[in-house]
Amino acid sequence: MAGRIFVVLIVGIAAAALLASALAGIQRRAEVAAERADRIVDRIVAVLESDPPPPGTRRLDRLPSGIAAPAIAQRIAARISDARDVAVVSVDAAVCARVGPSPPPPPPIDQRRAPSVGPELPRPLCYAVRLAQGAGRPVAFAVDAPPRPGPSEPIASTAFLAALAIATVALALIVARMAARPIARLGAAAQDLAADLDASPVAESGPGDVRRAIAAFNDMQVQLRRTVEERTYMLAAISHDLRSPLTRMRLRLDGIDDARLRDKLVTDVQAMTVLIEEGLELARLSRETDAALVPVDIAALVASLCEDAQDVGQPVSFEPSTRIVERTQADALRRIVTNLIDNALLYGGEARVWIDTDDGATSIHIADRGPGIPIGDLDRVFDPFRRLDTARTGGQGSGLGLTIARLLARRIGCTIGLRNRQHGGLFANVTFARPAAPREAAART
Image (tube, rainbow, N blue to C red; front, side, top):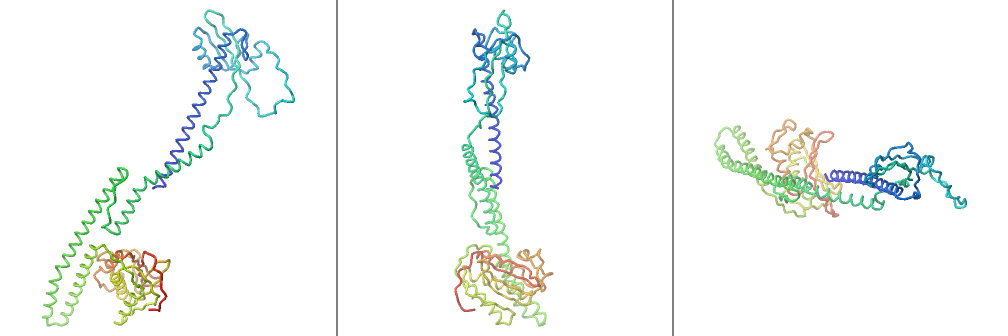
């Protein structure tokens, strides 16, 4: 946006400057032509008032053929009130000499001081005039034209033009940044809103159109927050109200004599209970935004989770790592990693876990050997209640695990990414946005 405004301003100012320069040149040439015509008329008037004619003028026997000069004729008529039959032509100075008395020979030229040969100059002109005053007879005479003006000098000096160009670029840059700054603030606010609905509203400043856009954006944020809160409260209320009936149902199931049927119903009740608990957890996380971050040994926390899984016979492996400290929430990170390990075991049959600090950012990797996820669904699996049972067999779970994991990751400044492995399976990555803290030399966990 700023670049476009800058280019438009520079092009507009340059075009305006060129147009102004062209108009100024035209005006200056018109003024020079008018001044030259006035000097010619002054000489013509001097011829009529002097006898003999002054230098640069001569009497003519007749009016030679030439190019009519109506502008000079109009000026003569305006200066001499009783002039009539005014005719003025522009001819070569040699023609004026042939039709009038012979001019005196030119003075000898000192060869020692003769000027050097330069570029050919324009041939001199003269104006032949014929007019009559009052009831008198017409007279004809010639007036040498003033020298033609040489090449016009530039309107402004090079230094002035350079300073003007620098000032123009600086002004255009400042204006472009001033115009784009409110848009940039609005874009940054939109990114903050995507990460946190409770982000601070944008200050309404700038031009009128921008202020109205910011006001509409702030109103949209309020409406979105209200909608999310209503849905969150509804989810929490439904989940909470279902706990009591499920508890009574679980107690009544003990009275069923058919053990096989009882076990199936108990399993269903347990699945519903898990769904309700995760629904309450999602509602709680949606309302909470503050996260107190403390230094945590990431390697030790992940190693302990893998050891707990190994203790109950689950195929989980962990590649030992040096001590890596990050500011995070231990409980939230434990919930995230546990969810990803459980998914890898559920859909892939195994989980391989390791930690690295590529490019200065700490990442926790969990890999499995399952069927993977279609590329188009890699981001959709984080939607609430989204289960891709056609891609990942089993059909278990509530569909809220990855949603809760992403919410927790955002609270502690992490990102969760999924990608398919080249030879089958899935990679899950938990990456800290901040650079990793300096690693301390320690024994392998």
